[in-house]
Length: 225
Image 1 (cartoon, rainbow, N blue to C red):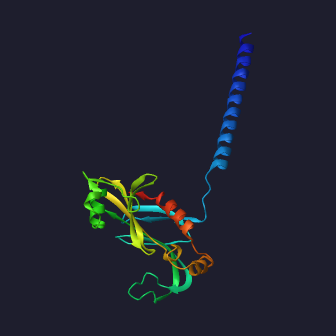
Image 2: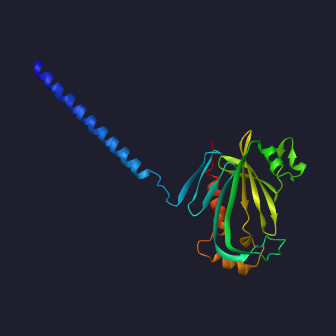
Image 3: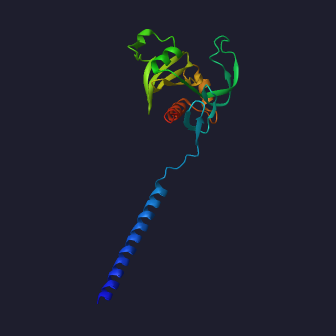
């Protein structure tokens, strides 16, 4: 009698164990399937850059070229296009260039806080734009910017479609990321439409809207060690 009960109990326990194993296998299979089908695919058009000397890393489209050293990083793109250098004011725009730079960004770090970095790198900023060690924005000149975790100010520096925008982004109390985004004069609207349309027809050219989107996408991925 007891022997029969022991066998019956053993069979019941074995059934429970088998059921538990089956459930565990189902859970593991479901988890594997979920991971396989919900993994973010790697974009083959995006590459990663890391400058160990500066402690800066970011992602960027592979169509661009990157170059860095101990002081700064340059992100660049150009296409074949013969045109005059409209920013050669001394030469009255008679200098001919065989390539068109349609994207050019440089970045470097300053070992100072945001305010001191702006005063050092852009000493022409009027004193009235600094009150109690804070920045006072000025529409069209100094404006607040936000790129994910990086926040700060942009400064417009240019005339007649030539120049750049400087971004001062706070990294910490004693470190500021400075990014210079050059104007692409031919797409600024400051020159004749015929040249702009010629440039826009060049295969592989980065137009103004594309450049803005690429710039934002790069800065949002910047990491500072």
